[in-house]
Length: 306
Image (cartoon, rainbow, N blue to C red):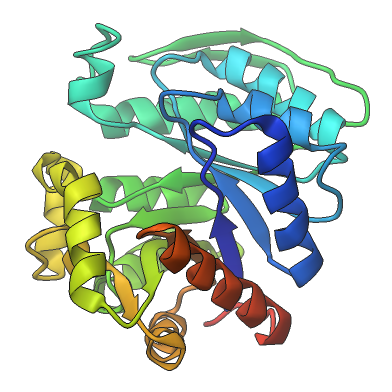
């Protein structure tokens, strides 16, 4: 199982983000990850970081598809590939109704159907092929060419069974949130593997809040304070219910270094191909968590679990 690291970028200057990225790259981290939230545009940030953070793969988990037409996203992703020496992993997702409809005024009717059509149009565009796609939900007609840009890996944030089938049938894999090892072993891994029958083994990237600390209760309270509302979003609520989790804190990896390493082994045994550390807690706890992530990246064999 590979070790990835999510890097906080909100309220941080690009030189601060780049410094964190270089430290991670030097340790052997598999990928550094960024999220599309309320600050930096993640793909623009990754393009800017390319010359500043060498060697390591740069990933976004994830770009919401509704605000960006497949042609626009393909052009941006290929531009990022050219700027970074083809190190991008492009994560895409549907996001949530409260955001897409509430903030953007965009309909999220039949999100799985929209995602299937979106990926069907996006994939050939990323490979430089001419597209004349006419679906029920979207139209995409055109072709793109960016010198020295290879098609990036594409993963879909997939928690429901229909999204997991799309991820397995059409993309390189999935990235999960709030999924425990048991949920990955009993639901995520078998569902995506059935969909990918006859295709390359799909990636299952598990993003989890991690706190390396001797104060487990304090870490759980921090997560509840910062991420508690996630339990009210339908897609997240469904995956938490599968793992019998009342809220985000119940899905987190918390404990001292030995305990966290033990819990990570459970993710590896469940079929996770990459574990993405999302450090949480106060500054000292996050620093200790990042230090363990970097140490594990140096010592963990980079093997994809079956």
